Length: 308
Image 1: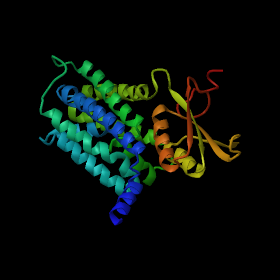
Image 2: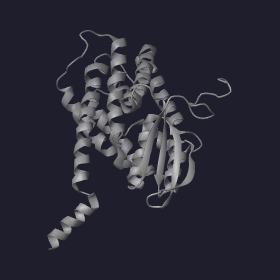
Image 3: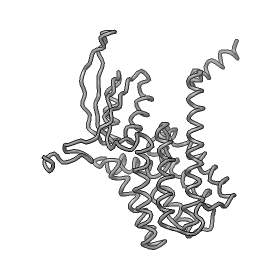
Image 4: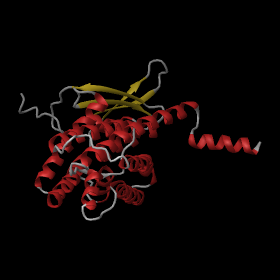
């Protein structure tokens, strides 16, 4: 009886029901596919063509230029350092979001490094920059789609915002951090490589959005019905730096009154919000509406005065 009780307790703690097991299995498939695509883009395209980029990849490439160590090993070390910083400054709840990929991705890199395969028949930096951006964007898009992310500059930007620059948005800090990495690569690899890295980064950002929501969506509108509005509002306004409209709604079937939150954000930000809501309120109801154009004063919105 004690053994059965222990098993029940373990299942309760980790929520090991059939639905959860199925989700974990699907997540692992997506993650392994993403790791393989991302690892291939680095080992078969970026590194053989002497390119760099933003993010942790760019940091590792800069360090690798001074230390003759395999890229995958340095990536592991970099990811581990960021995980430790996240644990210290943001807590272990944030660590759980990046731990799985931070372990699997460098492992896949180590395997792919052994093949020493090059996609391009001859060195072509322009093609390499384009395809690196596309494949890396597909990788991150798959991760974000399943609610996961790297222990990379996203995490660094969160730490900087929470501890030093709470008045700035996360996307602004992330843009600054990646900008510093790319500018630094100009001193290490030359101005041309830094400019190619900028091209890769721009293609990467666009591809992530395309993977998540298709080719036509720049903004999405999230409508969230939840019993825990305070926590969700705090996350959207504090961590994502987006505005929120709230109202009280009534379900006509149950006659229960709940809070409905409405926010406009980028596709990538919507996946972060969805992940937070799923962890905060399992009974929440989330609707995503694709938005073609937004006029108003806000982050990335079209200026209503200029277009009227």
